[in-house]
Length: 618
Image (cartoon, rainbow, N blue to C red; front, side, top):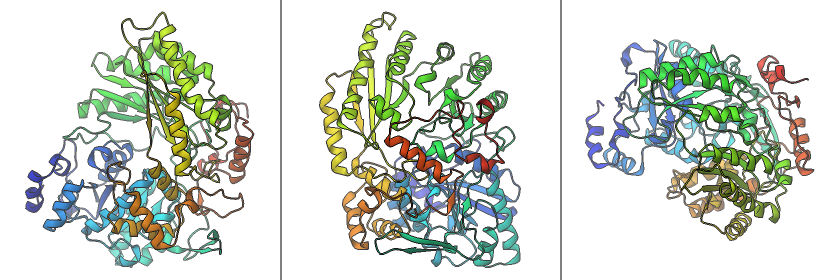
């Protein structure tokens, strides 16, 4: 920490270690010896951003270059922001303590729609205009990636370049290109015209959007040599792709304070509500040998005593038993715990439970998503109630006493019976515990039910569906509360108005950018936090801009409507999504990818390869 002004602020804020830098394994370079300085910005607090695996990967990837230096930047909490603005301190990077305004690249990862206001706030804190048209110089260049980049339009006026898809390769390509144009003294326009030639680069300023009288989109037209459709970038081989040799070890507790290791990308299941399950297709697995070797090395260099295996559905990893055996061979003697989140109810095998009993026991989490079989079939969950009960029985016999069940309210075709079924299923799990002769002696059961609000997302079969209104969700939440009659079951819900705004930004067009800027200038930020979210300010912003949230969140789209993300290509065929939507309304399921290929089309971006294809009969 070099800046005396920053040091002076630390004694007056909570958790000053968020802002000091200097952690174990952080990278400090001589700024005069590098060509490109990159500020990697996470638009939320240090504790959340430092838990994000994508930041760890790209931080190490850029810093592996001799000609570039990547530094971390997080959204300061309100007390720190107030102190910074009062004392004229601009948003700074942790490694150098220098304002990011002078950096070459400012990159945001977009993990959650309600962090968008923080993106604007961080640019403003850095002393930069929030709109890209008001930043005419080549640098700093503001870029953004992450899952929310699949519909970049609500942020389009603020970002110079979006990078849809996976960033390990395109990040280096973009740095190489920027380095070249800096040496030439190029203008920003000259650089952007070259950048759009790179696969997986979207320059929103090169696309014109026209609207119909009813507010729907009439056309999206590319110019300046930009492609009509921008395809996401994809990593083919997870065994050879860059992976960090070290993680920065924080001074303060963070959300996931452990080694996190990705075991595969994509998902075989095809749940129709799940955006991640479609965005990260096709299936690509990392070998057990690579996972074990890299995990052990990371534990050694960080001192962490826990490894969490990261994926959308860990028990769908084809060699999960072999992997656990390899991990336990070295982790048990070294007292290192192996955590296995994202388990599936329908493949929680005896063999898998035996392996899990060798690691530190905590609560198990499963996601039935709905309380009735009809609705589970409609959303293609492919889990039966008997499987939920059988898995619970197996877990209770194995010594577990806490189970968390994830459900959603407001799913397409949902009825009152489906809402009631959540309470019925949770009660059956409680009853199964007390009926089980092998349950732990002298302990009671705890069943936590989380009922989130369904939000339709791009590139899913439900992208055309209306989202439940705030009043509809309130009615369903109240009904569910009334159906739970035991203290063994605890209920939690998402804030309804926050789900509405998430839906607006998930499917919004460029006009929503004006609402976003107005709300931010009215004081909106950290909108994903219950104590910061102010729906009245958002409502005023919509009124001021002549728009309504209902148009974006609560309206059914026709299949032939041009959607705001129509010019983005994530590999999933539109006719496949339409067919899946129609099957949902008939409560017809689709087999998972290993049982039968459904022909989603995602492998076209990976040279026709998908790890699931070699294991089915198609």
